Length: 405
Image (tube, rainbow, N blue to C red; front, top):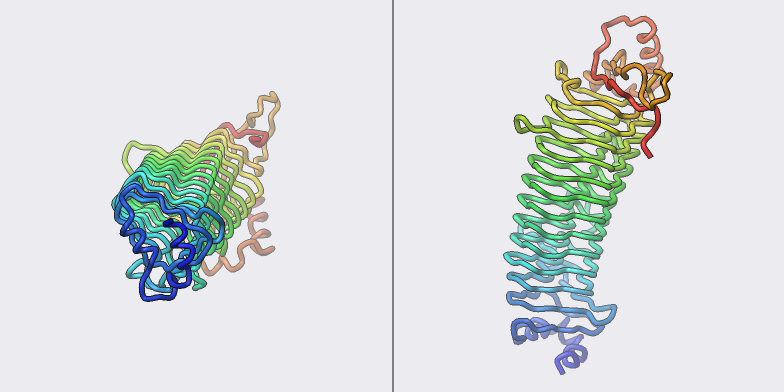
């Protein structure tokens, strides 16, 4: 009988002063399952008890009418499934969202389409919950004015799986630990995935393209990123994967291609007596494969395929000791040595120097000519007969002769 009342009252629910869906939620006992048939329901609803709302057929729409948050929940054991959630407000200071979920555990948001909502899903102090198979997009605003597609704040031990974030701003993980972020897709955003003060997260098998930055880790520790594909980060500073002030990270088996900066390393590892492991990645066809900024030592960089990049190594800070990283056993397509004993290891170390191209690294005005025939010719001539002392960056003592497959 409950389903029939909701179905008949679609127009009244959307356009009347009251909200029959909210009234139904308020009257339902804790633990109830509300099954909604196809129709348009008025948003601005709140849930503060264990409850499930499921769309039993396609076309179940909850419309926020461009005001505030469409669905706001507080508490545990709340499930939202098979819903189209549209038209939140556009105020940043109130975090107008499609779904705002707070202070709970063992909740679920799945198979929902969240469209024209400033913030998509905002999770605050939510743990041991599942967010999966959702499509999320923000308002049609300029990039910096959109809200975050998915935002975790002090939210731990969640599964974030197979979500698609299109034309939102960021997916952010703030002060949140132990989350499994797997098989998500993001495009046309700013930071497709951004971590701040977060630890022990697992980031695996995600795919990101056409964003300003693929994955950026800041002030974090003890995290694994594996099997991710980051492609075509946009702009002159478009970044594939960034590490800033992070420690005890494992970055392995990722593919990063067609970005301005492949892997960006800034003061990482940050904590004393720690390492980061950057192993077995494919860093392909970027303007810069590895970009070191500030003092970054004690990274273990092994077994990577570094091929097709304009610059393999960039160090933009004078005097930093890039070679104080453990760099061994990588494939470099620029290696010029031989393998006479056929053991797949170069007979001589692969050494990287900077010749005339150090001019554009330290002088942004010269970078206008980056990649031009002028710089290429100067670089070629300086290798034949250096007119200034070349800058030594690093050496790989055991360069591989074949790419990792």
